[in-house]
Amino acid sequence: MIQSIGIAVVLLLLGIWLKQRIYFFERFAIPAPVIGGFLFALINLVLHQTGIAEITFDTTLQSFFMVIFFTTVGYGASLKVLRAAGPKVMVFLVVAIVLTILQNVVAVGLAPIVGVDAKLALMTGSVSMTGGHGVSGGIAPLVEQSGVSGAETVAYTAATFGLIMGSLMGGPLANRLITKGNLMDQKAVEVDVDESLIAHVARKLRGDAMLHAFVMILVSMLIGSFVTDAMNHFVGMLTDKAAFPLYFGSMIVAIILRFINDSREQKEYKELVPTQEVEILGVIGLNFFLAMALMNIKLWELAELAVPMLILLVGQTALMWLFANFVTFRVMGRDYDAAVLTAGHCGFGMGATPNGMANMDSVVTKFKESKLAFFILPIIGGMFIDFANIVNILVFLNIA
Image (cartoon, rainbow, N blue to C red; front, top):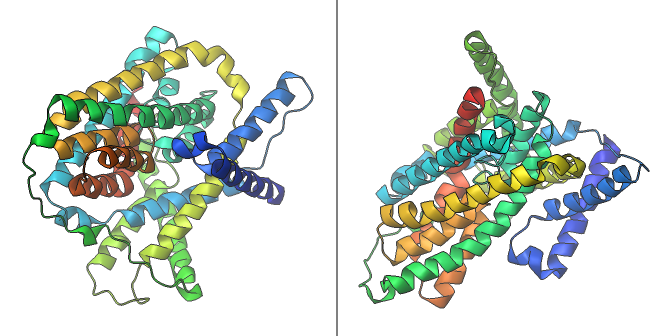
């Protein structure tokens, strides 16, 4: 166990070093643990194929860090922010949820055509597209444990593909929408955006605040484990085809505690949930969890799945382009802000919120700023979509 986390840390540091020096990784916002983990997976592939060795690791701490990360996702979901953000944010949340449903419909629909298990095909749906590497790491191991071989490898590979394609697609699509519709010539609509809702006021980090945050995460994990057990006991009485993942209860508890925190008067270093410190611990948990998950994937399992997986991913790419062009852009107002947000949706709908932000940044650098787009995307992509997506995924896994 100690050796496993030690190697994961080395791979994480290697990934950070490579990302700083190779433009491709920086350009497409490939996470450092994914870089280091995939590099080791390639080495393990060579060792396996040549018959020299096959290296496996203890994954005990992987689950621990995974639950830490998803608990912090729950703490990040502020219902107070959602209520105060206005109708456009709610509309975009609905749009984003509809996309996750369609991503899974496409995956399940193409499964019999390409000849793969529907649950395996779902790993190329919203699990890896909207969910990215984080949700892939939370869901794919459960699917693998249920007997679907290759689920983790497919999910992580699809998530990496999504990061790249979403980044390539967003800017050109927004550029076409803006120039074709002469959106720069439209009179700008003044929108009252309360940027304080998403502003991060940096404060001095203190040891007691970090300890407080860590304790709150562990408390949510403790209570959440009983919540998950109770929910799975209830689900088990209805069906044996579905179960909530280990971290689901912790997310619910964290959301409740965040709601209580937001309802109280806030005093610096005296809040129930120190959100800045919780966010930092979430980043740490995600990086360790991804490094351990990626270094454990078995790339040789992709050999028989290469062609079916390519077809599934082409289907997801086509869906994202069509949805962004004909749904996101139109529903969000068919104006300049909507075009910028469309670029962002391509990024986080096939990868991660940072990719979406990078897409929008490239658009506004060429044209003009869009406060509304930069307000909406991080609220939905960073706070709410993961929770809604996981519920959606569990429904599809139950019926697949």
